[in-house]
Image 1 (cartoon, rainbow, N blue to C red):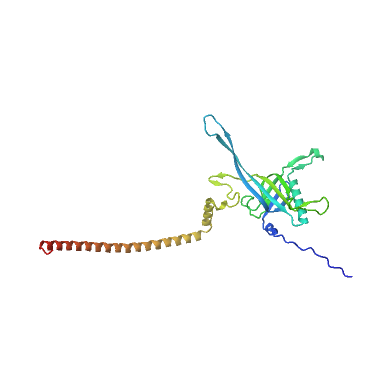
Image 2 (image 1 turned 45 degrees about the vertical axis):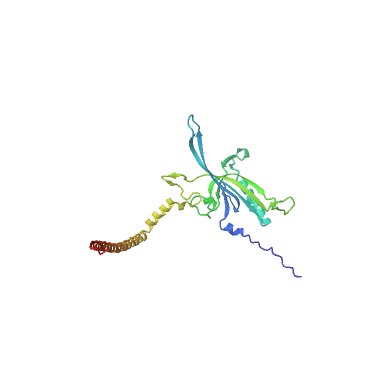
Amino acid sequence: MAKAPKKETPSFWDPSDNLYNAGFLIDIYHVPTGAEIKFKAWLTNFNDSYQSNWNTEETYGRMDPIATFQNTVRSINISWDVVAASLKDAKENMASCELLFRMLYPTYDNQGGSDNASSISGSPLFKLKFGNLITMPGAAPAAPASTAGLLGNMNGFEYAPDLDAGFFTPANAQMYPQTISLSTEFQVLHNFPIGWEGGKFRESKYPYGEAANSSEALHEAGRKFVEDNPDTVKAAAETVTQAGAAALDAGKGLADDLGALASGAIAWAKKAVKGGESQKKIDQKERKLGMK
């Protein structure tokens, strides 16, 4: 007797995969171990904070305190959802979260084979990458966190399963959230030159890569274009010069025409004045003879 064909599970197409593959993802790299986790960017909150810190000292008789600059720090608060379309996805998401939380612990060197003799050999530093919003200056938006992520430390993670979305329960007492909400605060460690020097900012593409559109960068781009394309610039200058000369000639001709017209008008006015004076004399003579 022939066996009935085995039913295949229909494939599921997740449109968010296209966005993930296009680089819309949160990429977290663990510096001490080289481990890396990538999440789809189901972003629920993003707050990029820049704060300057000052020491202030009150002095007698002075209305304002004396302020001494300390530093400028950058911190990023980011929250996102980790969504599962199936039990398989939910298990993978749980495993990713477990690895993420383990990354918060330091790296140890075991000296002498005893746990008590272990010493910290590495702090839990991270590199974080999210498109062009969290990136090293000048890095490509799609570059990985391992090479293009901002260096910093996480102040912890908040893990919150969405109770309304429910759980996958493949067996008794086993629960895998359909949606997990994650949030963290990331303190940026500037491991590249930053600040102003000689009227220019040291990293022209910090923080989001668009500072290259500033007047300073445009001036530099124009200078470089002139250096790289001298023939093109020379030809354009000659064209502009020729156009200016033609316009000058045309303006001179127009001025000559207007001058001739003005001279004619003056001559006509003079004749009109003389004619008026002659008529006046005739009228005076007629009055004397009693003709008027």
